[in-house]
Length: 208
Image (cartoon, rainbow, N blue to C red):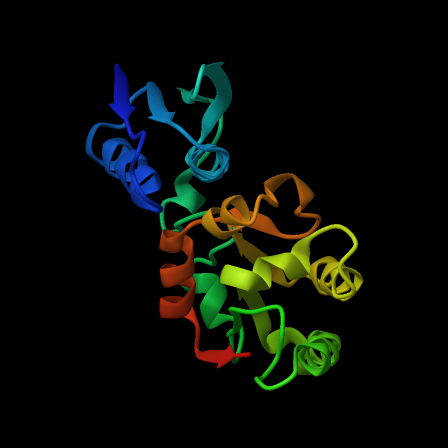
């Protein structure tokens, strides 16, 4: 069974939600999602991958076809409880005392002086490791996505956190807005469905 859904012009996270609904309702062996921007392509491709699909893409002018073909050999039973590969199942969450999400919406910390704010943000990111294993995820939206890009002073600190097992989600719509999609050097491009689910699953949310 093959399903094709046209999602061009739809805002984040609607293409991912449409893909999710189609998979859950009909479990197609092939699913094709049509989008018109790179952020949607990355988000839908990643979601398909977590659901056991082999993903390829084709570009025709401004439109991008994301083609998912079911990998029948892959066991996706563990993914059924998850929104994506980075969201923990209920059993995994029960194994830790706390799962903290840090929500960042700017590349500066505080208001008043941007130069000072940039230094404070670096200090904030550098200190997050003190949360230890309780730190589960960092979510970056709006101007905060600049922290994830090549050459930013905070990049190395974020890469250290990721290497230690911290999940980092970077808003794809925001990266696209700032023309930074190809400069992200840490974390995964994400969508608002992932963001909302992360906040829902968190035992505590820290807003920078």
